[in-house]
Image 1 (cartoon, rainbow, N blue to C red):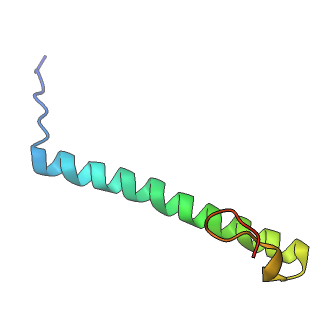
Image 2 (cartoon, rainbow, N blue to C red):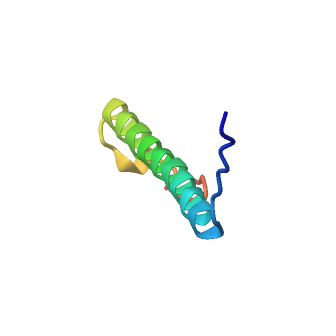
Length: 58
């Protein structure tokens, strides 16, 4: 039986880390945008009712 020696160099590990982080952030952004569209649909596209970036009503 042969023994397999697997090696990931630092460049490949860094690349895989970037892919994972990018996937997480893009999923978060998509869900945040999708949720905002759902809220706008139910409140009648009245942007004045939505909070600003600090959580305060406009």
